[in-house]
Length: 141
Image (cartoon, rainbow, N blue to C red; front, side):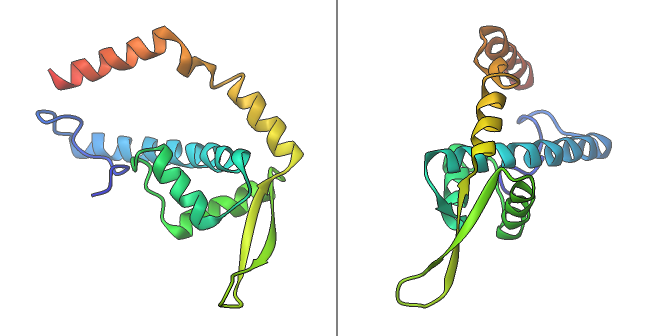
């Protein structure tokens, strides 16, 4: 099981079938939203191809957000359809194959900056961190 798959919450907490279904739906919704954020963050540093974006997501999430190649490409198409990123073709040395190199558009830069400076600011608050710590403590009790 990958770290992004719902599991028992703690060593002593087993989820019912209903709870597993709720968690799976919530995790799926969160994963799609987080994937868009992580793609934009990856491309805010530099243009990248999908393999590099995948590695960035794995590193940033410490492998808790597992994304397969098909899901990543679907997300890249979705974000590109929103005109937040664009791509160009680059030849791969020695193979002649073409690789898509993705980069943020000006609109993508503005949307990302606004998101990070608006809706995402709560993650930096002491109350949020304390609430997470308290919830984790309850689960491990």
